[in-house]
Image (cartoon, rainbow, N blue to C red):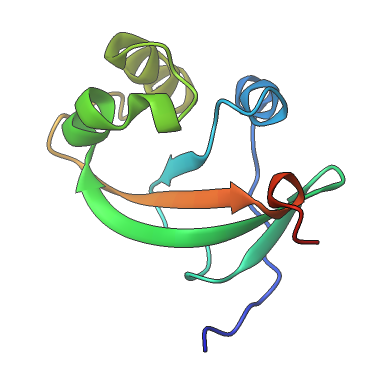
Length: 109
């Protein structure tokens, strides 16, 4: 059985909009936020992390951009560069890809 802890994951305005329109079910970060099974809240919505993988940015941009709430790979790259202006985009940089589900949408609260 996976133990659940309540964690905090900060989201910018762009990401919040995609969470609220249900187009975002993942977030890529420079550090790991929690573990599989952990719970976080955004507003009144309850989310559960179901997978964490360390992946290169180019893979996320090309294969997983939709889960990040983006319409195409370039939008993911542009958002990453906006959030990380000093380092910018580095194709091979490995980051933590957090995939999650909204438990409220599943009827599991």
